[in-house]
Image (cartoon, rainbow, N blue to C red; front, side):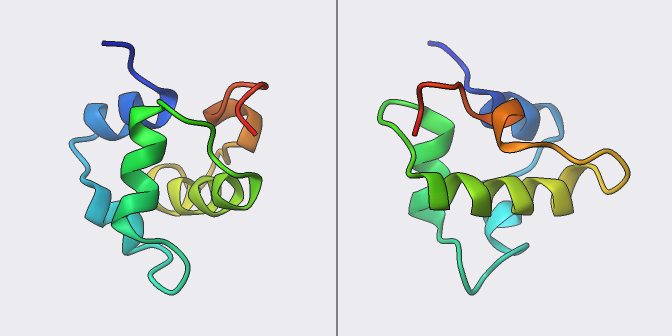
Length: 76
């Protein structure tokens, strides 16, 4: 099984999908996070932006991730 960058980061930090949703509860849901972690289908650009912001809030306040860091170029 191939791990996506988001899945790799969350697994390394022992974070759950709920931890990500808690960062932007008015915009994200558990289904969006799970689909991005699995990486089987392209993630819409708007969802990529939301997940990037949530990951920045959760993981790394000093060094911010860009969308390109978390999602492959062809995944839009």
